[in-house]
Image 1 (cartoon, rainbow, N blue to C red):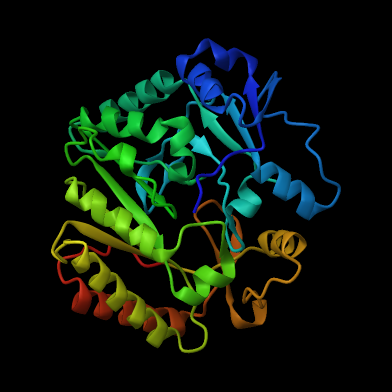
Image 2 (cartoon, one colour; image 1 turned 120 degrees about the vertical axis):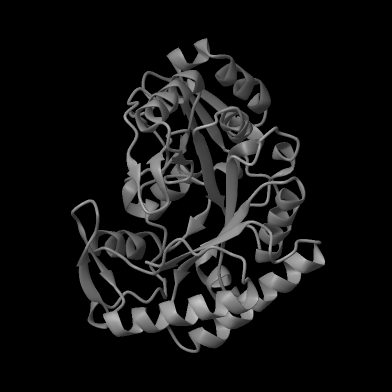
Length: 343
């Protein structure tokens, strides 16, 4: 799969005072339309009339700006805080919660005032000292999708490699890890990969890497001494789901072994079942009119989330059965792996 290249890149004018912004401009010169804006939060003039067209054009747009709001959001259960390095993703996963989080024009944003962001991370570490503070780098983005342009993950891994009280983690659906293999990470960064069954990947994860590329990337990182992990999600409890996910875990185990990764390597599995909000359902159906995502409220139960809004999740009994199944299956295939949560 070719590296993602934006059709256009918009630079916040003050961002060009930073070396990273100027480096990105040099990398994209002659490869994308280059424009300048006053604020990365005010993007106008993108082509497209329908919701689908506007969405698609935003996905082809890279915005380079400054992160001015330095109060980090919490990121439970993944980490203590979400560190705001990027937002947006060029992938087209139909179920993605960023459908609603990023609004009608989900452009990919890179923030170049990294020293400000890292200094704020240090402040949070000092508050929690002597305990460790964990930071999630992919709450609103897929950072590896644009790493060949931004280089931000390389900077972040290096930063946290030198922080005794900080730990960094992020997840991706892309296998672009070559630039991270020689970074002095000191085991302080855990890189995870989103995995799912072939049916889910083919039907609903458009514009992302195939499963084999993600597993190969995880193996490369394990070979470079990184702790690794997998996010199994969203888990769909539909049809012969037990058979499909049992096959997936066996496949992951075999492919990791083929790449020389012992199943006792330091790895985690985070388990996330499918859920949706009414707003997300409406946006998904607007952007993907032919979607076959299972989003019938009659098959779900209503639950309030940690941020106060409601969502539709699977009923209690199927959820309990699924948790028992996955914990048992993971104990069989990866007995040394940690399962930090099932939601």
